Image 1 (tube, rainbow, N blue to C red):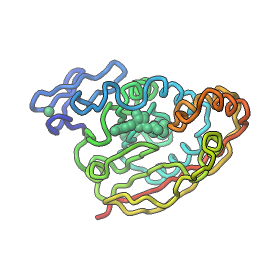
Image 2: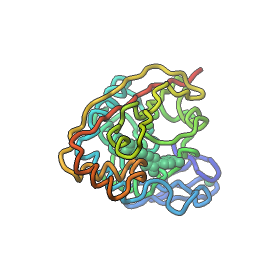
Image 3: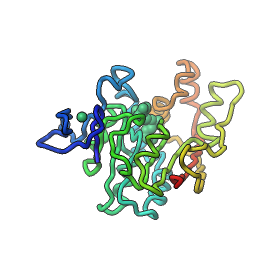
Image 4: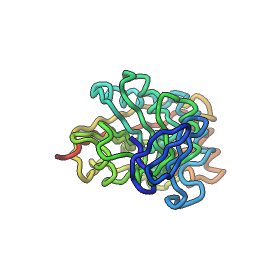
Length: 266
Ligand SMILES: C[S@@+](CC[C@H](N)C(=O)[O-])C[C@H]1O[C@@H](n2cnc3c(N)ncnc32)[C@H](O)[C@@H]1O
Ligand SMILES: [Zn+2]
């Protein structure tokens, strides 16, 4: 399934390496993932989310705070019963990990992320999933590889998505809804601009359906809010004063997700 990120020929597994016909080779890490992000494709030394963000995300997600979203993803994908899924921008693997548990072992699950720290955490925790460090802008997979791509809050390239999904293949895209984390916005902006909820166009795909998932998340302890603050870009808008005030005053927070299914146009 993997292709060489340098010459795009298929990669074969030999010993603990993946190798192409031109002898480009990529080691399997001891955690079981493979790094398919060549230095020349990196736009910084350590691209993607850093270790501190990954640790915070893992703790926040393990608290069950976004489990309703994970369950909703699992419901959509279990009904489809796909033979192959790619979690693109998989982070530390929470959604693919729970999804793999919900599906039959016949489903081949792959996850990529540009962050090596994220992939290392994912591979260690979820050994039944094939994880790779790779860019969503140059996916290291052959054409027509996947029945479904899952994309939760992650960047992507529409040409690459069209290339790696099979004919009639589908994309499940999760994005914030209008009221997502609105209390956090109210703490930093004098006037809050809501997220746009217009269905985003996905070139090469047609929109099939949308599900909106809203709930109020009770904040069990300030550490949970701290973790959330470390994993969202909005955190940069806080200074130590309003961050402290926000953490001590907030008892619950609004969660609002939009799940959109698209199908590759024929
Ligand atoms: C907001 S996080 C979401 C992670 C995961 N889907 C989740 O919801 O827990 C966005 C992820 O996209 C990754 N990312 C950023 N740019 C990327 C790229 N060009 N290719 C692949 N992943 C990328 C980051 O490293 C990060 O893990
Ligand atoms: Zn090669």
